[in-house]
Amino acid sequence: MVARINTGKSISKALNYNEKKVQQNDAKLLLAHNFIKDPDQLTFYDKLRSFEKLTSLNERAVTNTLHVSLNFDPSENLPDERLTAVADSYMKRIGFGNQPYLVYRHYDTGHPHIHIVSTNIQRDGSRISMHNMGRNQSEIARKEIEIEFGLIKAESKKLTHALKLQPLNARKLNPGKRSTKAAISNVLGIVIPQYKYASLAEFNAILKLYNITADRCSETSDTYRHNGLLYRVLDEKGNKVGTPIKASLFYMKPTLRFLEQRFVENQSLKQPHAKRLRAAIEYAFIKRPEMSLPDLIASLNRERISAVIRQNKDGIIYGITYVDHKSKCVFNGRDLGKPYSAKMILERCSTKQNNPHASLADEKKNIRGSETITAVQSVSDSQQPTTTLIDVLMKPEIVTNYMPYELKKAKWKRKKKRLSI
Image (cartoon, rainbow, N blue to C red; front, side, top):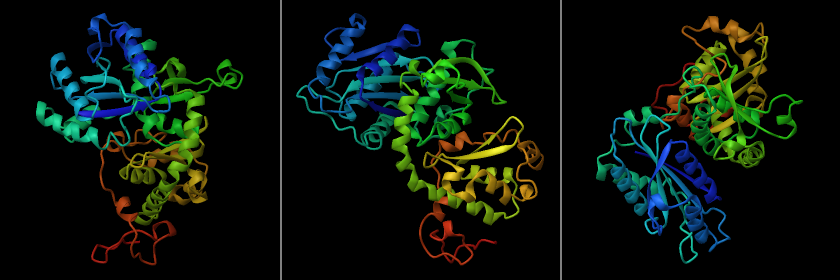
């Protein structure tokens, strides 16, 4: 079982999201805990008013909404009664057993999962702390419930593979707005709260890995003039296909205005993680000084870092963005420093020394089995916590005189095999 926790400021948004799923026959209400009426007798406003009565008791609380999804392996045939029992056990274990909460079963993905909506404001006006709940109470509850109900454990490779975030395949999407919206929403639900990006370009660098883009459209369009944002699916060539979806139609409201607030918050949060990226790039060149661009991308990929290459219609590279799936941080190359910009990286790569403006089409000839370099990534690895060589390098200790500046604080033990430079 995998538990994903979202906290928010609006109980109505969380409730609306699930109720719309019910209206679209993509979900059904299984349980209304601590509500006066039975689930089939509750209207939308009955549910909303019950929550709002509690949230009004503590208007100073900025965060008052709990929205949890519990995800199970596709092989687990779980009837409604068992899912209800799991939800009850989970809410009691995280301290929400006496709170009103709604349990919905969703049918919009390939694996069984439920959503739980509640508030942390109690009847006496006090609030239940949700700080680090995902890491503490929820993690303990998850492990105990897996044993209690005999569920497939979250640590198993089987469940990890089933629930990992996959790039969208435009050909497999059913035509129409509803299918596109559900597919994009699944990706946004992971990317928006977890990754740290400080511009729309950096945000799109992550989305591109999953064949999605946030499009402002042309400067002459109404969308651009009104600061609108459309989300679109990309095909294997990077072309926009399918029905565009307005940002305001998604549950989390990923509008440009909302994202701009995230940009400001993330700018300072991601800075401490820039060192790991610089170290990874420098170490790649130490291992293989005569390296092509595809070689560099593959090396970074093994360290759970995706290099997203930006090029114009003529195939000329003009930018590079690094997505670190371990720290969940995104950096434009130039922001890391001049040596990590697209121009300097191309010059440092052996196959580009004589022609720094060559296109990716030329580079593809130098790597076997390469399918695409425009958005090289390893999504499966990004979901799996592993200790990489770069993590070891980031630990301070004695270094040799041959190390570049970014690696001078790396951890090296004399007994270990030395690098051949």
